[in-house]
Image (tube, rainbow, N blue to C red; front, side):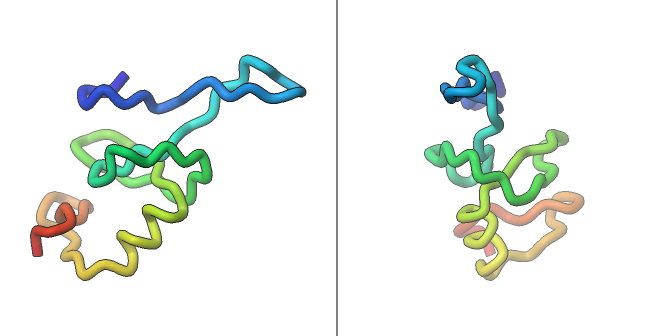
Length: 79
């Protein structure tokens, strides 16, 4: 479990493997997202985090400056 309390993987029940674990979105600016449709990985705070397709589209379409921290976007609202 990460310091923010959100787990990187969650159990997912399926017919072929009832104990399979899958990664969930770890967008550091959206603590609510639990999507398993991972599109990219970003580095934030020294951690490699999975980011889902919807969150990535929001980040990519946003007006953010990359590089305030090495290789990381500014959080939404901080331009």
